[in-house]
Length: 138
Image (cartoon, rainbow, N blue to C red; front, side, top):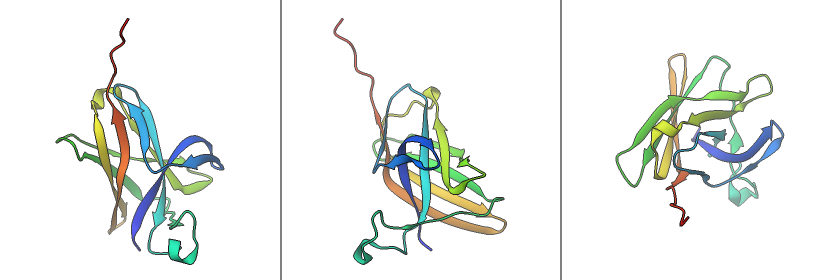
C-alpha cells in the first residue's frame, strides 16, 4: 500500500466532481479541500490507468488527519478531515481551510490514517496553492 490522494474540485456530489492536480484558493477565504484517498501502488499509468491509483476506503472507525506544510515558509496547518459522503463513499474526504489560517503559497498535504493500532502515512505534493490578495487600483 502506497497511500496518496487525488485533490478534487467542483464537488457537487459523490458522482459529480473533477480531479485537479492542485486545489487553488485566495488568501483570506474559507475553502473546503476535497480529496479521494488512493493506493498509488496499483493501477499504474504503465498499465493504462487514468487516473492512476486505486481509490482507498479506510474503515468507518478510522481517523484521517491532514497536515498542510508550506514549501515557501514555516506555516503548517493540522486538522482532522471528515468523510465528505459517509454513507456513500469513504474514499472521499474533506478538510476546511479557514480565513484565520493565514495561508499563502504552495503546500504539501501529509495524510495520516489511524485505524486502531494501525497507522498509514502518505502525501500529495503541491496539493494546495493559496494566492495572495491583490489590491484594487480603485
